[in-house]
Length: 227
Image 1: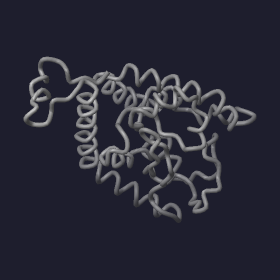
Image 2 (image 1 turned 180 degrees about the horizontal axis):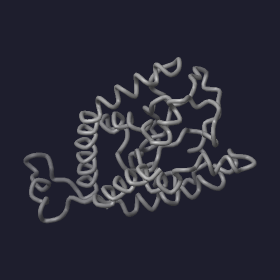
Image 3 (image 1 turned 60 degrees about the vertical axis):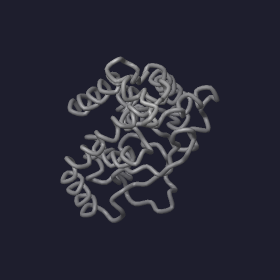
Image 4 (image 1 turned 90 degrees about the vertical axis):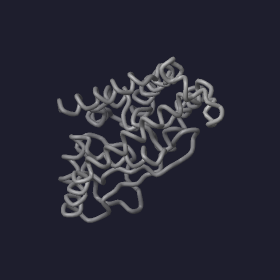
């Protein structure tokens, strides 16, 4: 688990006069939140020009907002509206399917580039900065798919902040192509892919650590570069 209990960092955590006499779980949560806040702040600052250029490309390419906002289920089951760059034609009624299958006709020209490079996920740095998400953690799902979580796994997976990346994001980075081969993509996602993702998410919760998160961030970057 994320831990701040090593001798090198035990001093400040054990200072009751500063209100930091925390148990191990609380230390781990504070450490992970600090890690997320620092890196998301740096990311937003350094990538600001890139984000602005992407936003301009989206506006020039198709009508609609720059961001795609959708309700996802966060920590402890609290819903929030995720930030992503819009990669599809604007659908104000939200009537389209909630999974993307193969070469979905709704995807815009710029959207194809953003999806292939995973640049559409960058605005989630704002969600991390705001404390709704973490850099690493189980990917947040829409309520209709969370309803299919087995109770025990639901409690475990939703006990942590959802993340921009995790091991399932790497293992299933070509998920839309896999679903395109299924006769019933919705059924395949719920009954085949989702249970495997949940097993990986539960493993992450059990084994989460500082270096594990750093490793997953680096693996995600390498996986994107290899596409």
